[in-house]
Amino acid sequence: HEWAGVVADRYFEICCAAVRRHAPGKLVLGSRHAGRPPAAVARAEAKHTDAVSINHYRPEGDPDLGMLRSLHALTGKPVLITEFSWRAVANRSGNTNAKGAEVTVPTQTDRADRYRSFVGAWMTEPYALGAHWFQFHDQPADGRAFDGENSNYGIVDTADRPYEELVAAMTETNRAVLAGVENRWAPQEGYAFDPEAWGELLPTRVDGGSMAAPVRLDLPSRPLVVKADTGCSGRAEVRPEGILLSYQSGGGWGLHADLALPPGAFSGAASLRLAVRGPLGKRFRVFLSESGDGPPGRQTYQGYSGADGESFEYAAFTASGGRQEITIPLESAGLRQYWGNQRGDRRLSTADLGTLSIFVFPNQGGGEFLLESAEFLPPTTPAQQ
Image 1 (cartoon, rainbow, N blue to C red):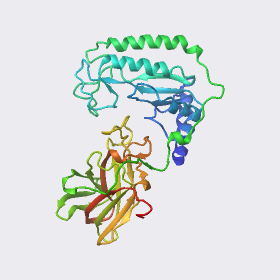
Image 2: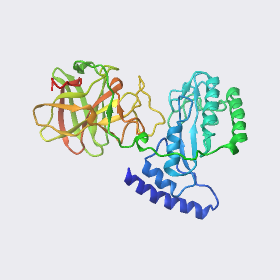
Image 3: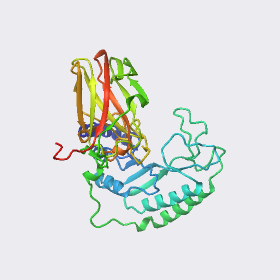
Image 4: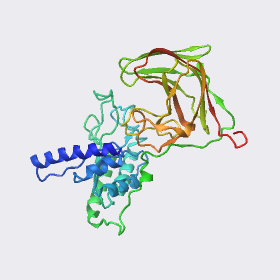
């Protein structure tokens, strides 16, 4: 993260100098972070810009003032919210809201109420520069061309007809904001940046639970998918002795086999025990992902029981060429930097696990890896240890 700050410092130095040279007298508003940025990046950015900007989708209807105040304290700059909105199930454009930021409410009245609450609270903050609603019109019912988003984010529908409740809420709220903006005041002590609350590179915490005995994963019953980078390939199949992954590991990031986990089956687990067989000297790794995971950069990640879609990785292990048992403490996880929610709570939710993955490192050639068994284990007592 500190290196990212070095890169950001140089990037903003060059770009902001160019903007100020060719468009003097204009505000430089930052880079529209898709959520909370690394602290080192925000600090570097603020050295060169007039404001910092951030997208801030909130299903609850209220801004996260703790996070926004921390961003202001970290940078010393005004903050501009560059995307926020809600989408309703009831809409005139036929939007199913199947793709897009997960900020769904039942009705247009709910959208209007959330606008009042969000903007009313946000624009009383003394460092708040403004907020941009996403977007003016609804997306096409069959999805926009480049990614298929098909959501009711619009102030108007696809026939250009305003959503009256939302427009009324915007008109009323914005007038009140403008009337009161001169009365905003800053607390005498200002705001303080809290690194702990920012949640950056913190140790992984594991949710507690009620597991009293080991829970063995029924391997043949679990859906199985293999994902591979260009130049790699793999096939997984259920055998009487377990799940066999036949792979060809070329370049790129490698490949992994993903097993879907049954919802809520491992609440309270403290460790994972695997029985495996792999080619002598070949390296592998285990990933555990919460439900709701996906590529970094999504606006929201929501699992089936409140999970925030983080994905965790564990220390690599080297295959012995024969059968070996590997016990992995769940608290030894590190957050995967290339998959899952990068802005989550750094908490492994054992009640909301979605996927167990076996990762094959790249450039290891062909081979076979057998997963004989997998079971989640409860915390041990001193007597058991």
